[in-house]
Image (cartoon, helix red, strand yellow):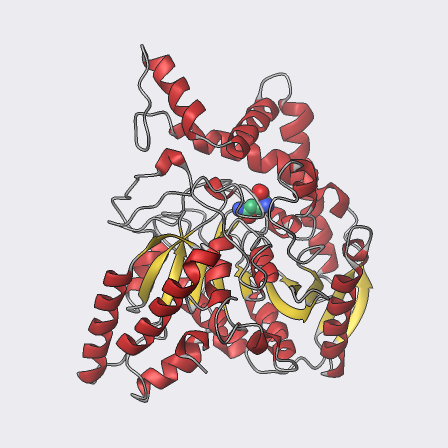
Length: 489
Ligand code: GLN
């Protein structure tokens, strides 16, 4: 198997055993990046020279007998809404087309301590608003499993890079599903941590009460290892959790005897493609064979989750995006006076979806409508949170599909934003409740496109989520077969 198609933990072991060098590995990934980028388009910025320099530095450390971290020398990619000092952070927006952050996000500082190799910044929906990466102002990203299809979004570039072999691992962000849904569409593993588990310092804000950074990887073991690197309290993010960070790899036991899994009946209803429902149910069946106990549960307010999310997220976005005024940073389009300058800047530099959300958000927050929309949405959010609290009294983990369908054709949904919003039905409740969740491959649809199983956990209980995911992963080999050996066709 080619080096670019392996997992980070396999490669780490090979590096430690001196079977390969970081330079050789990085060359393999960069060659795959060069071979696939034209077709896949996962990256906004590629960093071949920087990556080779980082790889050589790791080889020197290894030669000097120094102990290396898990990610040392392993090529990865970073979503382009995570600030990287000295490297552009565009959020796939004309507004930040030339923006270079003067500082690193906390996750980047934590990663740097491990000496990873960063091969690029990945494409995404503009400001992370979308579920297909088609809202990028930069380019279209194609699903490496089927180039006519979307990779999902908004972390579509990160998921596509991992699936195409142009990165071994990636970081994404998840506000309403943006790690889990592209992971599902591209057949990789994506973990959204508990709100507060990972610092948001240096993540360009979309909806501050929902955003979380997390890993996209080839398997569950890599996700657990990356969680070990990026988690923890941060002085720079007052919403980050002071809770102790466990060693997430300790969850990878394969033992799920007695684990109580809840199946929420609302997640298997209308709109879920039959092949998705049957693959997910088959995966749950596997877990029962390993000794897990399954019960049907109810999360009664699920049907309100999409409406609630599409009030709260735009309201927060409208507020967060007020800072792009042509003055502080980012693009400026001149005008006769300051009002005209701001108007020109925001009119010309934000894309249509971002503008739509700013308008919805400001409307929901405006004096006359605040109570009817924003405040009501906050109340429903509490009801959704309570649904989970209630359910988790009797189960340890909740299992359901990540997305109602496999990846769809590029262009097939763009003219219908509401239909696109409805696709977020299985992912947004978790963000509203602030809980951890993972998506991992559990099947392949008739047309060869991957299907994702979502496992959701209690607050700060990524351990149980990882434990169940790992145990299931050991029973099948979707995570191996789905990485295209020869690269995207
Ligand atoms: N698809 C959702 C949206 O458009 C989620 C995006 C995200 O998680 N960043 O808002």
